[in-house]
Image 1 (cartoon, one colour):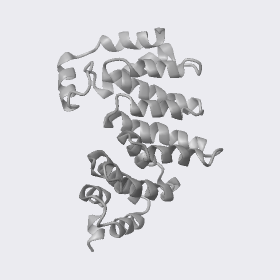
Image 2 (spheres, rainbow, N blue to C red):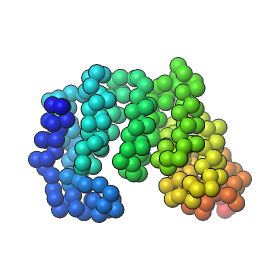
Image 3 (cartoon, helix red, strand yellow):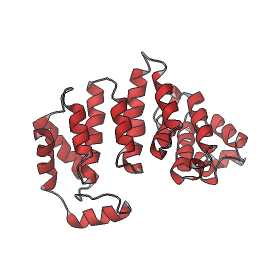
Image 4 (cartoon, rainbow, N blue to C red):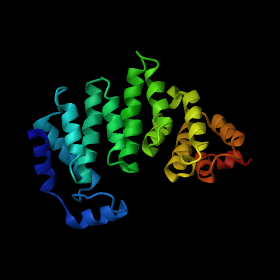
Length: 236
């Protein structure tokens, strides 16, 4: 496909094998890299968009999946940036595509972009006309056996502030921390703490009360993360 080939040619010109090795080691050797740092990649994408624009509605999903299946991790990062820009201009339902990306070549570096910046943004838009769509998807994810879907159900509201659905936040935290298998997973415990810490910027009393109420069942990691910016208030 010409679109992805043009991006491939642009990125390959500046690949750095030494940085590629270093960043791959940092990511536990789970992925291969071209060795392009984020600021440089973002500048290259600006150049690319000027010449190639965004995908059309007709080829958007095909392009995203094509990039997702390319061997170096930078192509997946580019796919996420294209996705985020695309949904700003085309407010449609691409939740199934997002779900596919969450479950393929999964790790925190892509999921933690997808959950708040893509899934979260789509839910805000789609929820205006379909009140059940958010709960239908997130409930399915929270009850799945995929750790990254479960993590997404916890952190998709990170940017919501006063728009946070506290009922869903509480529901998915409790559901995941009561899970006999996944409650022990670092990425679930961290997600719970992260979601609470972020919401504490909007309602610190809720977070303090929540941690106090569930003190015996929340992991130490979740509690520590949740109260990270509130410890002084918490112990006064």
